[in-house]
Each structure stands twice: as C-alpha cells, then as structure tokens.
Image 1 (cartoon, rainbow, N blue to C red):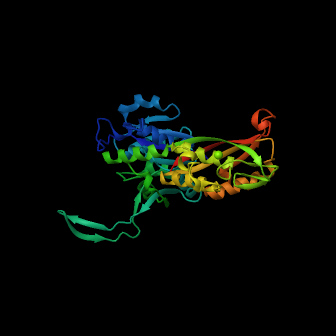
Image 2 (tube, helix red, strand yellow; image 1 turned 30 degrees about the vertical axis):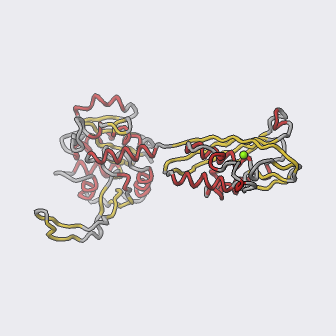
Image 3 (cartoon, rainbow, N blue to C red; image 1 turned 180 degrees about the vertical axis):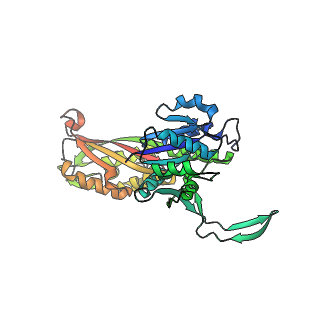
Amino acid sequence: MTTAALIVAAGRGLRAEGDVPKQWRELAGRSVLAHTVDRFASCDQIVIVLHPDDMHRAAEFPACLCVPGGATRDASVRAGLEALTRRPPDRVLIHDAARPLVPHAVICRVLDALETAPGAAPALAVIDALWLGTDGVVSGTRDRSNLYRAQTPQGFQFPAILAAHRAHRGSAADDVEVARAAGLSVAIVAGDEANFKITGPEDFARAEERLRTQMDIRTGNGFDVHAFEPGDHVWLCGVKVPHSHGLKGHSDADVGMHAVTDAIYGALARGDIGQHFPPSDPQWKGAPSHIFLEHACALARELGFAITHVDCTLICERPKVGPHAASMRSEMARIMALDVDRVSVKATTSERLGFTGREEGIAAIATATLVKA
Ligand code: MG
C-alpha cells in the first residue's frame, strides 16, 4: 500500500499580512511550507503544487516533486493529481500548506480510516452556539448538532479522487466536496485543535509558540559518590541491598537516586540536591531519598516538563547490582510516575581501579531527558 502526500501551496493568500504569501513566511526559522512538508516525511512520495511564479523555489524541496498550480484551488489539486499519475500511489493525502502543525496522530487516523473507506477526513465538532447576524445584531440561531469544522489532510483512494476531480465542474470548498459530488463516501475522523489553518497574523504567533515548545527537549546529567562505612546494607535506587558495609551520608545515601535527581535538576537548570536540601539542615538527616526525587519531579511538572527517560549507571565492585536491577527500575518508575520502560538502571565495575575499585565507596552517573509538555 503506497501513500502520496499532495500539498497545496499555490495560493497567494496575503491575509496573514507581510509581503510574501503565507506559505513562504518564516516560522521558527523556516518557511511555513517546509514545516508542512516535514509532517509528511513518512509518505512514499510528496507532490507540492506551487504558484507558477514560485517554481524557482522548487529546489528547496529536493525530495519532492513540485508542479505549477492553476487559477483555483480545484485546478491546483487537479494538477497535483495528474502529476501523480506518472507513479500512481494507492492512496493520496491532500493537505493545505497553511496547516504546518498537523499532528502525526491525525494523519494516522485518516490512513486507518482509508483501510475501509474510499475517503476520510479530519474534523472537529462545532461546540459553540451558532448565530445568524444581521447588521451587527443577532437575528437568529442555528442548530449546531451534526456540524463539523473541516480540516486536512483529506485522504482518498487515488484512482477514485482522480476520477472525481477529472469529472468535477465548477468550484468546490475542498476535496471532500469533489469526492461527494462523485458519489464517494467520506468518513469523519477526529481532528485536532493543533491542526489549525494559518490565516491571520495572530495565527503565526500561535504557531511559533507551539513549535517553540514542541522542540524544547532537555537533557541533564548527575554524578554522585558516597563512601562506605560500617553497616549491613546499602540503599541503591530505592532498594535495600544487603552488603558488608553501609554508605555514609547525611540522608540514606542512595547514591543512584541522588544522581538521577541531580540529572533532573540539571535538565531544568535548577541547581542540585544540595541547594534544595542543604546538608546543614538537620531535618534531612537520615531522610529517604525519594523525597528529593519527588521534589525534582514536581519541579519538572511545575515548569511544564515531562520526564521521558532516565538512565542511571552504578559504579562499584560490590554489591552485585544485576539481581536487584529490575526492582530498582520499578521502584524509581513508581516514584517518578513513569512507565518502567522509561527507566534504566545498570552497573559496571571500574576494573578494580580507583576508589570504587578499592571498594572505598560507590559512584553513580545518570542522564535525564525532559520534554516541554
Ligand atoms: Mg549524594
């Protein structure tokens, strides 16, 4: 099953202001069209319909076939569909260039629906009341039940929509109208508010904001060492492990959990454990380290970040970590409210070299990855 994307970028829409059409305006450092094209990278082929005056910009899209559009949107889509007949796909997704933030999930829903329907398109149910207005005064109301706001991509079996466009006469609001005029049934799938169409200047600000936050991925590192002292167990990543020694520290000396906690603070650029829980403060004496980790997780949430992964390496000759690694992962996952497959705990020796090799203590390093939600 092959899929083509047909991106319609031939409009001259200047409503968004600026001296260039909106698909060429810059959004987070690249053109709107470049962002839109990226969203369809998993398609087998991409056709972009450009305004004839813009064909010199085709070189910006070396992986796409660029064709000149016509005087109307219908004519432009038709030009794109005809270009696809050289290597006909099974399915085609027809998308507006001015919707650069279409979520991957929306594209997947359209493709899933095409498994059983000749056409499928995303839409959002109308939830606001609908009025009729005359001269600035409400002159009536309209029933909003069964009304939808249409989005793109609108997906079709390629031969069916090609035939529908070839047969269509007159104008159409979108490709669903063309398909329906040819008797094709079009399934409605859930759209997304993020898939808005850039129309006015305020939409650029909204799109910039979304792109900026979508790309905000942080990584932080943490490193910690605790010395052995007399004792019969150590706490490592929230698990009590019997051992010939204990670990010395102001808290429970959970070296692994401290490294993970510092990695999260690092990703947030918010200091380290010592700053948030000063060792000089007696209230943290003997404290269980999950308090620190929970604090770092809460701070991440408060700053709008989701922790997507942590990786911790314990460095020691003994105790053996392997038999406890699964419990350590699940305990840290529980504290951080993460899936266990987003939490890694592993161990290494230092080949009997250095302080860890001489069994004077345990070291731990950790990396945390955070994404702005
Ligand atoms: Mg520590």
